[in-house]
Image: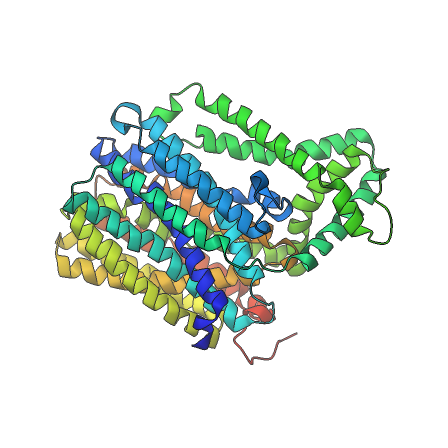
Length: 529
């Protein structure tokens, strides 16, 4: 238990709050505001596609691994990114408060999209900060750190989210006022983060610069035509990501009808991409000096060679390192498991607030049970789950948690069948909070253990984004599924329970290979060969 009082664990808890709070803004607050504004269930479900930012944030994660002073902020590489994104969210929340979704839902969702992008970027830096703060040999602290991160996340999401809903009901505060109240909370967190010690980054930077130097040597032997093609291919996913976030994935019916939205998003994406490349390129002299400390900077490196090598070492090297470490077959199995594991839970979570309101629960009921009770249960069981994972190992913890997670979804089917019974609501929330906490701790510890410390931000963002991918793009159609089932909530929740089965079958197949990795074994278990 002493691991929970380690200063690093306490800092991870605070960062978890900072990570969870934006989900109140783009989750429960936006969902209920859109419902009060008269939008259909399908439109509310499509609005949830702004969570795509969390699914594809790995595409711009190399910038967080490379750029040390975003927007000129110099608090340390990880902290600077966290502070910068929090300030963006502060201004975006203030802007959301000036909108009216009844008359212009697209503008409200667009500004919440900005919050989602900033929050998804912040999560990259926060996860990298957490992993970099813990030594690779500190397996117990890695699981405890995952537990503290989840406990903090739920404190920010459910704890503060409950306060927001209580204020909405008890003090009849309107949604714009509540959005304005979120801004000071974000500023308080920004101030706290500014005083955290930055994880050591010298070893990581030295390795990254060595990899980049090797890519520069390789680029010198390639034709300009091939380098231009490589640059285009490497950079194009970012443009695709911005297209998806700009409405291509179907954010809402109103947004899809806004002709200016997609082209302006593409132009903004091109500008951001150009700025990112220039920022990386401007560090050329420093990188050359650090890579070759006993010689003068290599002034003979062609700009095209350098840009090609910079993007290749930032984007291709982390992927190559992951596949080299695990092998292609095991790596693909791991990635497929990550995509599928949380789909059922995501379907349930996306429609839960709509379900609560439709069967007769008030905002206050939702605040007390879905937020406050769920918050307390999740925080407590996250900490207990961390101890379980430390004792029994990550793979076994994941499998048992998956079964429990599916079983807990069936409780919602019972609640849907019997109606708005408060004691049953509380029981359902407690069981769901327990299983969610358990599965999340094991899942986060699993993803963290897979990361190469040379590319912490990029690899964790990739793995976490894949986990969010299934949750976002499949669950955004959850409203349509309920409509297709003609409002049959019990059947909907039974289907969400069955959705976890494919991932558990994959985990069974991969179990022996995964447990042979020392990072995934329980303490004091000899590594197998």
